[in-house]
Amino acid sequence: MSIRPAIGIDLRTTFACVGVFQNYRVEVTANNQGNRIAPSCVAFTNKERLVGESAINQAAMNPTNTVFNVKRLIGRCFDDGVVQSDTKHWPFKVINSKGKAKIQVRHCSKTKQFVAEQISPIVLSKMKETAEMYLSEKVTDAVITVPAYFNVSQRQATIDAAKIAGLNMLRLINEPTAAAIAYGMDTRSDRQRNVLIFDWGGGTFNVSILFFENGKLEVKAVGGDTHLGGEDITSRLVDHCVEKFKQEHEDKDLSISMKTMGCLREACEKAKRMLSSAEYTDVGIVSLFEDVDFSTTLTRGVLEQLCMDLFSQTIDAVKTALSDAKIDKADIHEILLVGGSTRIPKVHRMLQDFFNGGEVKRSINPDEAVVNGAAALAAKLSGERAKAKDNHFLGEFRIEGLPAVPRGKIKFKKTFEIDENGILHVSTVEMSTGKQNSITIANYRGRLSEEETERMLAEAEKFKQEDEKERSRVAALNLLVDCIYSIKRKLEKEEIKQKISEEYRQTLLAKCEEMIKWTDTKKQATKEEYEEMRKQFEGACNL
Image (cartoon, rainbow, N blue to C red; front, side, top):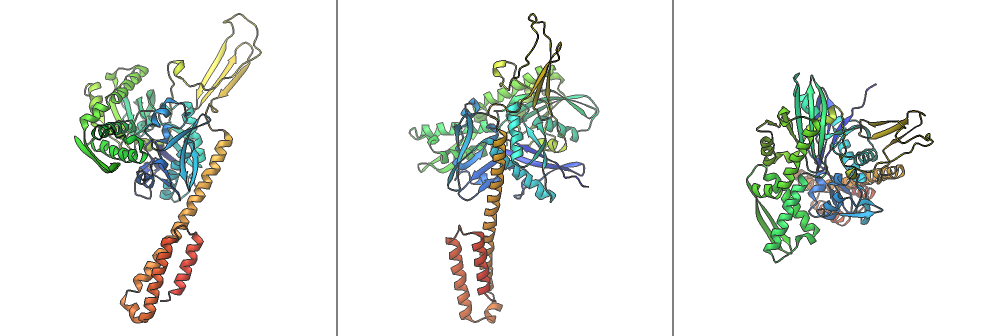
């Protein structure tokens, strides 16, 4: 009996990719666009849902219904400071629905609301389809990556999203740990070494310190910020351009137009990427706002100045991780860069300066390191905040019926277990009586209930069926159009002209033009109507 393959999915803030382990190596699979990584973006239109490249390509024209960076919402409530900060930069609307942050869009001429756990499954499903297309078989089992600093709420929300996507989630794995696994596969060595993984992606920053010896790895410390990434750098460039436009054009405020901000953000994202390889780049947008053009030159120095505090935060996290691991920076043997934001030259220089000229490696593709590790193996470590006020309240339980004894005389044995998915299990036993109780931290405040998860799973299936119906309808239209133009081309060939009378040929050409007009005016016809018209047309055009 053959075993179905399990896939590794790197579900990043700005992009996603999927890999499968085959023939002793990981293959990062390309999608139907030929790309190995795809934007974590979902768009809603009057006709359909779009995912990945097709979604991001129409974002400038449909900004309020194009959803991205949803990973920054997952597992968070509406009043979370992170949510409030991000919504200022997003063109789509996030509303307060009984404390939950919901994304509001227009889809098929209706206003609809989604929580983040409904958007992420759309991206996960796309990754699942990509793997199935490559493997030519169904896939259900998956390992999914999360930032090392994701708390229990965010991890459980990711598990819920996987379930809604129809995936059996084998395990969650921390992104830098997955990268370390990929590094260990790529670098065979028996010597002891401490490796620092500096993982800075589009939405999150992770730093991990790992100890390698004889093919084994031990996670010594993890840290980072789940709200610090390349998107924040892009936002700084956007704010800079908004202010520059305001100064040059009599206090005109670009931020009042979502479409304008969408166009500007797209241009600033391209400029940010360009500045990783060039000292300067031009940003130019025709008729950006109220028929006014915008043009400015951005330099690498300007970017570094605007984002100096963000760069400093990453170094502060490195210092904290070193302290937690109880090692000196001189004891770090290798530094591995992961994530697209590490392509910024300032990051490379900054790390070299901090580690006194230590070697900074790009021995594996920074965009694919994590998915390589996820597809090959799963590992996990989690941590929480030092101050109680900074922690999340997760739950409580009581042990009752204890004997009346002086304070301090009762002895408890407490056990805290974190499973391979990062979910916390707590148990306590009173030693003299054996009374005990336990709790699994799953139903945190704001988490989807079982009923909500099942409802969203049903809705996801409904959306899948609607999308398939729309694809079939459009395919039927395309077949009809292809048939019309195929007949039209045949009617221009000399052998056909000699075979049939000119009068009949002109009649058929007129029929072709009639059908072309019909398809232009019947864009919303059903699949069955298109198929019937094609059948009638082919019957009428007897060549």
